[in-house]
Amino acid sequence: MVTKRTSMSRMGRPVRTAALVLMVVVSAACATKRGNIPTGVTEPDKYLFEQGKLAMDDRKWFTAREYYQQLVDGYPQSPLRADAKLGLGDAYLNDGSTEGKLRAEREFQEFLSYFPTHARADYAQYKLAMTHFDQMPKAERDQTETHAALEQFAAFRQKYPNSELLPEVLEKERIARDRLSESIYKVGYFYHRARWYPGGISRFRQVLTEDPKFTNRDAVYYYLAEALVTVKLEAEALPLLEKLEAEFLESEFLPKGAALKEQVKTTLAARTPGAADGSPAGTPAPGGIIGPGNPSGGIGVTPPPAKPTVDVKPPQ
Image (cartoon, rainbow, N blue to C red; front, side):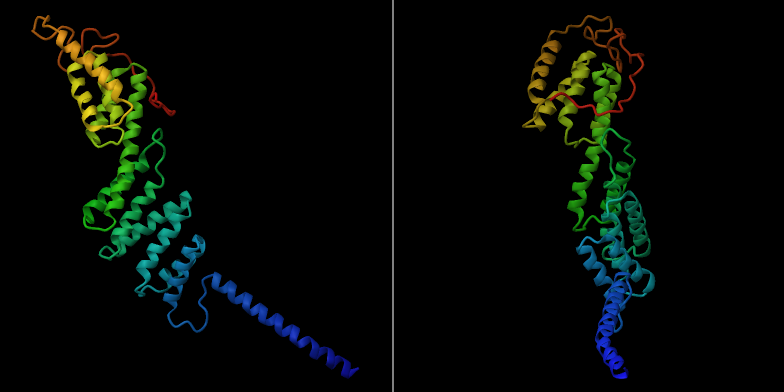
C-alpha cells in the first residue's frame, strides 16, 4: 500500500508542477495587463512608456492609459513623463467618447501648464484644439464647440508660427471656420426663403465680413445680391455679382448670377432721377430698404420668422 501511494504521489507531481507553472504565467500576464512592472526591469519608466506606445499602436486605448498614468503618477522625475502625459491625452481623445474628449482636454491643458517650453508644446496646443474640433456639431446646431476650436487654433498660430504642424492646423481651422460661417449662412438663407429680407441681408453680410474666404461664399454672393435687388438696392448688388464671376471659375450660381447681373445693369441704366432730392426713382433713403410692407424705405417692421431648427439647403 505504501508503495502504491508513493507511486501515485510521484505520478501527480508533474501535473501539479505544470499547473503551478501555468498559474504563475497567467498571474504574470494579468499583472502585466494591470500595469505592474515585471521583476528584473532596470528602467521601469521606459518599460511603462514602451508598453503604452505598443497599446496605442494596437488601438487599445484603455490599456495605454493605464501604462501612461502609472508613469505620470509614479515617476515624476522621469524624462519620459511629459511624453507620457501627451500619450495619456491622445489615448483619451482617440477612444471617441465625449467623456474621453473632456479628459483629453484636461490632460493637454495640464501639459501646457506644466511644460510650457517643452519641444512638443505645439503638439499639445494642436491636440487641445482638436478636443473641441472633434465635437463640432452640424451647422444647424449650437456652435459653442466650433468657437472653442477656433480660439485654440488662433492661439496656436500666435504661439507657434514656425511649427511644422502649422499647415495641418490651418487646414483644420478652415474647416471649423467654414462650419461656423455655414451656420450663419443657413440662418440667412432661411430668412431669405421666408422673404424677410432684412434678416437675410444681415446674416449674409455678416458671413462676408467675418469670413471673407468662406469656401461657399459663391452662394452668399448670389443670394445677398438677389435680396438687395428685391429691395431695390441694385447698385449694392452689382459688385457682389462681379465678385462671383471673378472669384469662381465653376459654380452652380454663375449662370443665375450672370442673368441677374444683366437685369441689374438694365435697371440701373433705365433708372432716371425722379425724386425731389435728386435720387433715382425707386431708390430708398440712405440705409433704407424697400420691400413688402415697406414701400417708402427704411428697415421693414414685419417681425422675423422663427430661427430655423432644421436643415435648410439652397436648391441645387
